[in-house]
Image (spheres, rainbow over the protein chains, first blue to last red):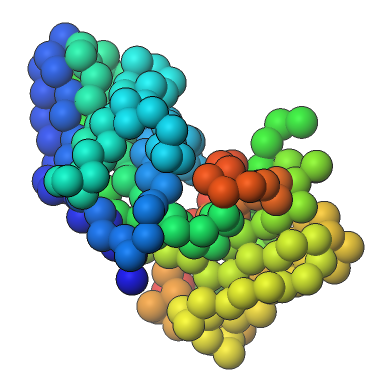
Length: 114
Length: 116
């Protein structure tokens, strides 16, 4: 069975500070891993995905994530937070080829303090 | 193409009424998915179509829920005899049928249902 745990339902950072959002997964097979962002009253937008190629994945808006098999982690980082980064972030795991196999975490709300 | 669109964006209904939501996917996408997102939770898979065929239904999809995609284009999700527990954001997504890892699903803005 696959599952995702996002540590910290709320994270606050100062503008310009490092953003670190944590995600740990459980999967019985090599997983595909994703980070999505959701702005208020909006759908989800894909930030980046890991599909067994490079373990360090670069995404949009300056975000990146590193797949660490030994730690079963896929933490999301950004060197310098911007006010526009304030949103809800979801980590998701998939064992298959379709979005019907996407299992999402409960989300982390990021607040950026000016 | 402007992406996945959903209608209506918001729906308030009385308990016991029926409601229907519509989703228009990205035109060349052959897969269409419905998800439900309750407050403080991540989206949960409900059902999906490949072209007009409904290939999978989650256990979350009770008998009061029915989804269709009659011509392999737009889809509707109907909830009969709504209950307060049905209050949620209903998200539609679409994707191409791709190879392993090609699961990039494009999500619509969702329909927020409130049952009073």
